[in-house]
Image 1: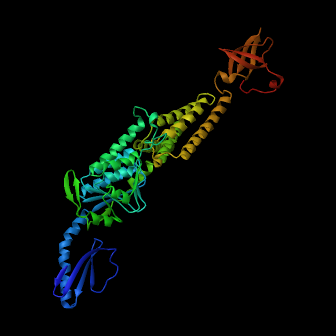
Image 2: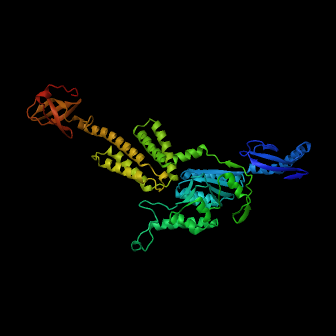
Length: 499
């Protein structure tokens, strides 16, 4: 604000979206590259020559004072990282790379905008470790209205230096869920065991973790602990009243305005935030993030694993096709890479491998379907147990498990049918192929002699009365001697070209 005689000049810096029309007595000058306008408003009677002189002087003065500050903030403005949906390995990797970029650019503030129903415990802890180790101020903003920071989101919110929520959002419900029920469910005191079980261990670990994160940031640990022990869920206003969050903001710009001048402690050092005119840059997701999110989806990882196994099996049974082997190898490697990033149950992996081995063995060993049925059951159980997670978004779809199991069983039965047909076919080589074939007597005396069949001469026994040239039927083989019998009338009419 400048005063000269009867002329009052008011100078403001406004966001781009606020400036829509020019009014009488106001001049707007855009600040290039900053998305803001410099507004000069005069109040007075004399708006002639001197008004223009003082207006231009005010603009030059403000530009010289603010240019360095705006350029500095533009170079290392706040970095916005968005977390939407369940938290898994892909989200953890994306956030970690965002923090690396913020540290490299010396960004004064990192903003995590979250809307999540929860996520994997391993990914959540990895993300929290990244936040706690950050050398930059981190603000977690639950936004937009209607968003939530449930389960894993509550840990992330409390781990940040500054916790902010938009109106109409909620936080909490961080009770871990285990197979067979919800930990923390009350039981009659008379039925309680004197010794803690696995459920108690999981609950106590999660409670201590939540309480420690709250206490690090100076928030009430007893209230935060109820997120786990009682599945407490709070609105933005309730969380603010209880001291779990620092403020409620309707937008990021509103949040930055409230944060201006706030003091944050980083590794014991007090840092004052200067965020009023801070620019915000979104940390974009790359194709790497999208690919990682795709293959770490449990359904995708399961399909890649099955495709890899099928491809290698086809290549092994049909050497030289190349394509199934190459594609199978790629799919198998991608599937194994995804599985090592997910909380897998190795018993499930073992059951799947055992099931495939039993079904493969059935096609070579006549076990009357016992091995095949056992393999199908083992494969189905292994698929159900493969992913060890209580987060619905990180479990394999039962429909997909049923479809893949049915397809595998169908392929097994298809291959088995060819094996059964092969078993029923008569032998076409070796001594077994001679059984039932015809032979011609070369010489015969006293119930023994020599016969010719398949171009070979064999010693023969079995007929008391025969003469050279008669046709007989081979009934058995004992060493180098065959047992023959007379041909029936219908057999005598047939010609055996093998003789």
